Length: 104
Image 1 (cartoon, one colour):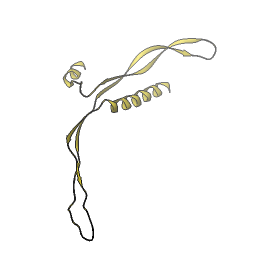
Image 2 (tube, one colour; image 1 turned 120 degrees about the horizontal axis):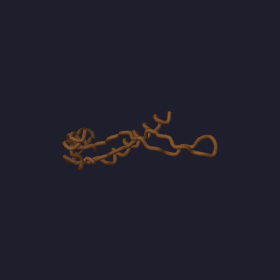
Image 3 (tube, helix red, strand yellow; image 1 turned 45 degrees about the horizontal axis):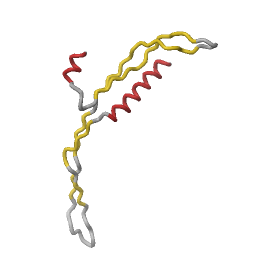
Image 4 (cartoon, rainbow, N blue to C red; image 1 turned 180 degrees about the vertical axis):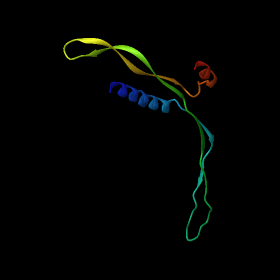
């Protein structure tokens, strides 16, 4: 049960951090010309939406063994080894896919 909670907490935190690390570049300006109507149409409408290129960051979620104090029933604690999430984030502007491939 605890392991599942730790993994879910890691995934949620990685997803929220991933949104912050995006590198967004505007590639085209937007244009909206709304048609004007009176009794008859006086102008044709033209809509051009802006385009964006989004480079998402690379997120690595792994686990590692850590020894932590876990409270037990009573007034004492004892050491217990748990698997905890480990998150590595490389922002989109700094990631180098060749180095990542070599690391694995």
